[in-house]
Length: 233
Image (tube, rainbow, N blue to C red; front, top):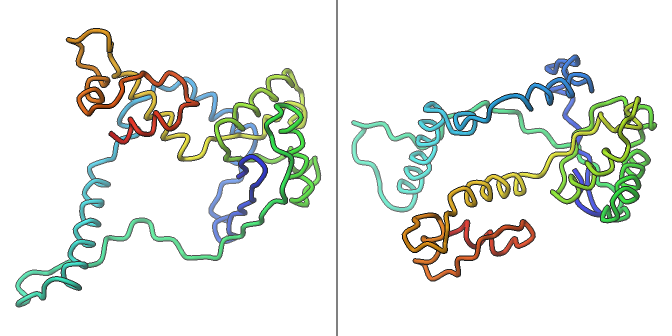
């Protein structure tokens, strides 16, 4: 994971490595999965919680409320009903000390191709891998949205490339959780925005207007403060 001039390498614990299918960790498998995903329809049920997960979430909230009430508010009388104070376990994992290696400060990746190239050079040098080893493995890199766009620009400049080192096909940049939620929220918000110029329109702009918020349509992602304030409302 890297963001601007700082980053870290999170190595998976040895205990989960035997559970992985090495055939699914190749560059070819990555490109095949991306190709299949690009042709799939985006369905709401793929993101919405299932009934099982909803029930589990409700039990977790109830157990937390019960624990607080029994500890600070009330005392149970009798043993006619069983009070559940512990939430149900969901795929419990062993607590292990993470293997995290911080990366030395690098040149900012704000200067498109040169900046990102220097970042990858720094990662290779500090990880102890040779360029051949680095480019022969699938590298999942989480970064901010700007860095992902810059990386895609660099990759487009190298097209066509016949090797992973030239094409960077083995590197998959993904936005962080905050940026992903930001993009989803913006898409939903703008889809239901409506037309603020028509007084009879009942789009999302009317809710902001009723709350006394200036109903300016956030058409750019650079105005983060404007978007965040409206998502909150």
